[in-house]
Image (tube, helix red, strand yellow):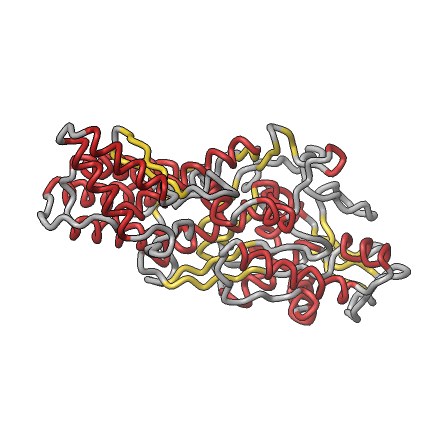
Length: 472
């Protein structure tokens, strides 16, 4: 039974979508005025894994990710660069898609853009005005939070408290209360605008998600996702607008949020010089390693990025990829019930862990426990070829969720003759024929293969003139 942590309920609850077999999922997308950063990468990879797990469980997933191409930051950067917001949007939307593809994030079902949804956004605002939730000022139209009972239920914010801890600056226009937020902003010099009943201008930030999520997914949404810093004010305001406008309560059944990401235990900031864009990240790190680095941490946990943590992830992932290649080398024919039972238990425990709010740390513990058990069997020479095939199939299966493994046989990396020599050497060692085993090791070294003895059996690396550390 799948359980998810619902930010609104502040506890884990049983997941039941509105429509059986279909998950309607909305993820807050990028504001495309610059490259996405590593925090965005963490969030989109984490929710990609969750989306893939739903599909692994047999659900159809309809995923909507919005593209914010009308925003204060868009206007500021476009003016600084002497471009229109549409030129800026085209440049960074294309970069966003390129980065997500490199990170193996599956495409969404729909990527609605704010600039293309203005007529529907205006209709939503008109509905709020008609129902008495909106008021006009000299600068635009605002949502009156005092008219919406329950404001603050997602974030725990009390309306009379001052606004703190938000990701973006709050509106500074003339309004009745500090928490009231803009639905429509009247045009100012050097700004793009659209005609509306309230004069030329553009929509506020929050109203876009209300309109687009309901339009493309229907209400209530099954899942609404985003980083934890969007809980307030963005997601809080989405709830107020949506439930006020459409009357559907709740607007969202399950709110899922990723935790913060820090760099060497510090908040990421351009002023600290630790701001990492996704293109910079991808120039440094194999995307599989980064996905693994994210996957072994719970999506709700704080993630601290560091060179040391990445190196640990790289080594752990290489260990598993080497293990998969060792399975391909198994030639024994006697079937092992011990291996069958170990795999059966791993499958059960893996799904149990993932069903518990996508507990990837526990799921990976299950995977490494299986690897350790099978390595011992490999060292004893009791694993059968059919067992190995089943375990490889398991890794291929879960790779549809994580997309981190190299699951195909690497026949070009090490000749079959060398693999046979490694297995023969291991047999000689067990028979205590150490001189003959040493002779085989020397012959392998001459062929560019270094062999290392471990409690789990032999490991090997390809030796080259340029890099003695290249893995086979």
